[in-house]
Structures are given as structure tokens and as C-alpha cells.
Image (tube, rainbow, N blue to C red; front, side):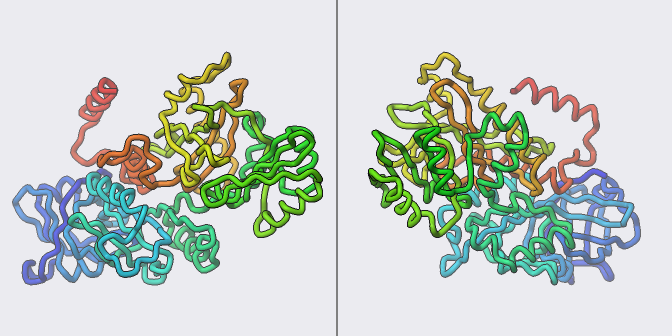
Length: 476
């Protein structure tokens, strides 16, 4: 069951012969192996009946009546793929990708997505290039009962409000844990997954303690994990005695917010945390006073205690490596990018949101003088292994993970965090340009896989496909 890339063009009712609502060339009908009788036609989760009129031209153009276009929510011209499934007499257009955002658009129709605008434009452009329709919507727009959503579609280099079917797949880019945890949203997502059978990937934020508890069960992963425990004063005392430096991290934190460093120096407790783009340092001679201060800082959320590490530095500042791993067009984990993140000299973490800067990972590794220094390939291989083990141990559907790794002064590699919602602002790209970033292309490849549209289009022989694969290998 192959597919063909076509242009779908809505036209007024009077443009169609009597008792028909779709015009298609005979040659295209033959390629799709369409029968002579009416068929079901589907776009996303919406279905109607197609009464087809065949013409003698050879264009990859399908015209649909305005009434059918309204029923399928295809009221603007689109470039899509189409295939016919004879087992259920269904002509399907697609794929339709939905990106779920928590952005509430108020008063700015031309630029509705703030810092995420460029990323979403790239997603839209990459989708168009691949014959994929993409719509961006927020939780309150979902209407599973009617199989529709209202949202935004990128048309003519601008975002336009639109109503569309529920999509073939949903990429969860909600950036607020509070919004994601809302019972109403969770209920809708469960309905989409279980009742509508729509895959939702990167469906949830990760909890640091839960990730640690999952991975520590695996012997291979255990060696990569700094010792971590839920915050308790007694455990804090024990770990400080053992390691001299520890980090307190919110289990549900992100972007470096809320991280506290605690050290023992000359029998005094040193507490450091970020505040207003600077590092605040408090020194206590009595442990009870330090713990009392920490209680004020950690009272509002759950924290973990993580062993401190003696990290490699770049120009005197600590550095970590963010490896972006994504599922590819075959559904396999692959490395998309690896960057070094250098801590701001006024901050205790390397996150870009905390003032950190980016460098090429290879540049940082070449500057480090270690006897047992791992190479870039080894770091990427470990990141892939982490993603694969995490997927095998967890219950969720993930297609993209930010794997944060560090090197200590002995050359040992450590996993400090796993992120299911890696940042997508322009600041996260080492060499910003107007070209579509590799992570977007990889995302779109995975969408074709998860929706079943990655098979060879109709009319391409296995011989031609093999030749194409050989040429692709040569170009690499």
C-alpha cells in the first residue's frame, strides 16, 4: 500500500459533475488502485464519503468539493500524501502533525509564539517540504468529542487560525509542569491515546528522582549515576561528610532554577545559589544554622541531594555536554547534536537560561588535558545507551531526550540529568542560521515513521530504491 504526493485543491460545488465531490486523474487513480465505487476518505480523525470523477489528465492534483473540504477541515489548498487501503475501502490524506503548546495567544496573530516562534516556523517549513500538514494548538483547543481542534497553521509565511481534525500524531511541547499536570489535560491526553489511538510523544516532563530510581536498577547505567537521594537533613550531613560538595536540585526543576550548592570548607558550611543573575554565598559555622537556612529554600518543593563532582573546566569554568538524541525515520535512537555548555562565571550551573554559553563539544574536548579522556564518539555512544535503557525501563512514549553528561578530572563520564523537553530557542544552537536545524528534520522524519507514512511512494521500484540508497551512502 504505497502513497503518492499530491496537491489537494478545494473548489466550489458547481465545479463538479453531478453526484461527485472529488476529481482525480485516471492515471493517479490507477497508481492508487482506486475502485470504481465510492470510498471512505479520511484526514486526521475525520471521515466522509468520496464520490470520485476521473479525468484523462496526468497531474498529481486532487480536487475536492467545498462541502467535502468543510467536512474534512481541508478548506485551504494543501500538499499532502494520499494512499488507498483496499482492506477497509479508505482513501487517506496525511500525515497531520499536531504540536501541543501551552501558549495562550492574545492580540498578536502574526507572531503568536514568542521565543518558540522560530522553532515552530522551521517545523512548519520542514513539514511543508515533506508533504506534511502541521497545526499548533493549546490544551483548551482540543475537542476529542468532535474529533477536532482549533489552532494555528503556517500559510503564506504567516500563522493563521484554523480548525482541523485531531492529528495523526501529537508532539507535546508544553513548557509548564503546572499546566501539564492539570487533571483536565491529562484526561484529554488519555482519551486521545486510548480512544482515538493517537500517539502522543514526549508526553510528560521527567522527575529527577524517578529517573534516578529507574536507571539505578540497571548495572550498566548505575556506573554513570552520581549518588542521589531525596532531601533529608540527616542524609545531607552524611553525603557532605562523604563527598564534601553536594547539589540540591528540585525534582521537578528545569533550566537550572532552584539549584543549591552546599560545601564543607574549613569546617564551615558554604551554601551557594543563584539569584538575579548572580551567585549568593552564605557561610555558616554551625550545621544547624545552615540546615535552617536550607529549610527556607527547599520548603516549597521536593529536592534531591546529588553528589558533587570535580568537573573538567574550559577557560576556568565548569562545563557539561548536552547530547540531543532523537528517534529517526526508522524509529531508532540517533544522535542529532552534541554541544558543550560552559557555566557563567557568576553562576553555579551551565544552563543557558542561567547565563551559560555554548561551544562545540569537539573544541572543548581538544582543550582538555586528561590521560583517560573519552572522545566525542564515546560520549555520543553513551548518550544513545542511556536513551535506550531509559526507554526500556519507563512507561512513557519519548522520541527526543536531552542527555546532560559531565566529565570529571579522572576522565570518567557521569549522567547528571535527562530532559524530555529540551529547549528550542535560538540560544541552543551553536551556529544559528536561517536554515532548518537538524533536530527539526529528525523530528519530521520520526513523524513519518510513527504515522506509517515512511513507506516508499507508489511507483518507485525496489531497484530504484536500492540505487538511491547506494548513492546516499556514497554522499555521506
